[in-house]
Length: 162
Image 1: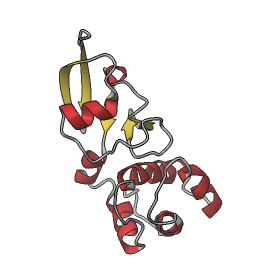
Image 2: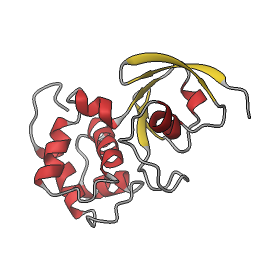
Image 3: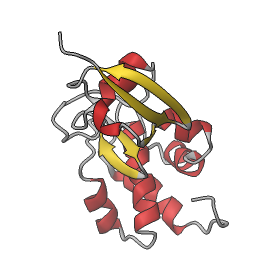
């Protein structure tokens, strides 16, 4: 058994210090050690997007990031962003446009869509498709997901809502 390494990580606004196995992936740490099961483990190769989390404000694949790499950083999961209301507009649009079915990909889709909205508020449908292409969904056929994101992008919002 490998020696554990101490790491201090702020997860969803709570700073915590834990002893972590050096080879444990961030997604496994979040799910197994902290019980934050909103983000999912699927391909474990970084190609499906189910494990998407935000590290220091940037979306990352939790299956490609070691938990010890988050030492001194801030990690936000879908649970934290949902509880804070940060994803509320997107969640509503996904619901209204039927952009979720089984829900397995939805947390990663929401985090990626939120990054798109912040980084490219004038994105075209083609740019939405390109940005979201790293997130796989086997249920919706993507059209409803693109529609939901486009709805949020095209709907005027008050400052701070997006």
